[in-house]
Length: 380
Image 1 (tube, rainbow, N blue to C red):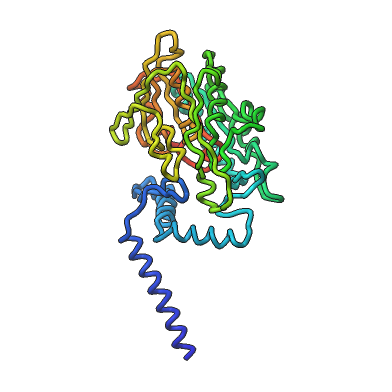
Image 2 (image 1 turned 60 degrees about the horizontal axis):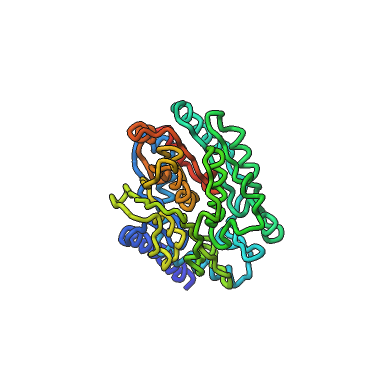
């Protein structure tokens, strides 16, 4: 009887593995996870370089993990189970004070960060004629460590930003987000339930960059500030499934002296007449209201009067923190090229040469930068 039960367990286990493997190949693979608010790993490319560098094995492992059958449902079940255990951390998200959620941030691999800064330095050295700035913004856990749950482990993002400042060469101007955000920590500069800064936080970044460039900055009085959503529950809430949270509001700053901007999205070969997509306000990912979400390559063209133009062109190499900053920059630069280096696989050097780019702004948040290898693409 015992042997029969053991056989049933073995056959059941093998059958479950076979069924899950079959489902992995049969079910359609998602490109984007609404639950995790991120793009999932694409199928790995088998090349000799990827094989020898172990990149193929890592990408294959990430691909299987990201597309495991019913992954979103398993994550939701895990979140629900942990929620009823009254945990203050779930799926890497802490439930902090004053309604704030925080993504766990532990000590990063400084060897990898050194590689990223070396890549940026090499890129800058290959383009001595180009003015480059590197703006690195902390996430909310960097500004509000005192709001974390008691004894919650967290590594200071200030140390990471300082390390990057120390290792970036003099060919770039480094802008530390702590410098211009910390004085406003008592104000609403981050969403409580999402990993991005608010439009006001983005405005502070714009002011800091504009002042560094010597531009005449626009004050808040120069904008009509409108609230476009009172129901934003962002990526942190989605991942953690914590309930009873007060939704965030989303604001948009519309210049009182308005000039139209056209936005060309190379990914889809579409030209939009607005930098804002209100359709996302009815979806889970409301932050994609800004610039219509993530795109590998965009070009924004604004009709400015000659007296309003501070420079002709700008290339922004960025993550999604830039989405709510770029609309401010269109008030000074009539032609802005935007590359999300995580998804753009062309040669950025060739793109700059083709489009006559002489000014570049790198804009990233600390958490994304330390966990992503995309800056290594600058060596291509």
